[in-house]
Length: 267
Image (cartoon, rainbow, N blue to C red; front, side, top):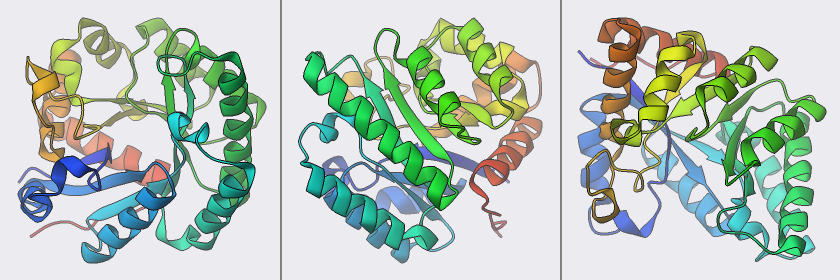
């Protein structure tokens, strides 16, 4: 029986409004668990509600995506941080949080996202939770690595990693609690395949970032779903010249070590 994990998706997003229950039921057929990420206050509440409906299958990380940081006042962010703290027992991580130089170009907005990123790293330390990092755009991964190192963050997942293999190796060598997560779009990326080959299995996770980053060739017109995470496991096994079951067991162990969650076996 295949029992795999999607460590990062967005099941609350509008792309699932018409058939969310069906998508989750189909995911449950082959997945042991998923982590849905709340990216701003309203979305965070929806994520927690969804997890309540699917205990021991849907887990939640809560963060503030960089693109939403610039929309929020200091008071709104402070209230949201309090909300996250109040729901500490219901979440497995802080994220996604980080830097985005693809969508955010204005220097003042960049400064703002950096300030809030540091705040959220401190919150993660206070709550003793791992962080799930969104680092997009030129130099963002390198800068994010410095941020978490300076903040003495011990556990971090570089979500949807798009950097070079050498940078991935540097990250994993920096701290044994720093892991790389590869998305289903690995099927279309030579660089991601090289990362999968180079990085030790003990530092790898698999995700979909659904509804985004479909493994389908014409991905911009295809909605991704959590069960497509199987593509990542298959590609990691191919690059490692290993069998699927070995990869499955390794990533399962990585998940439990990173997020402190013991997933239940399906029957």
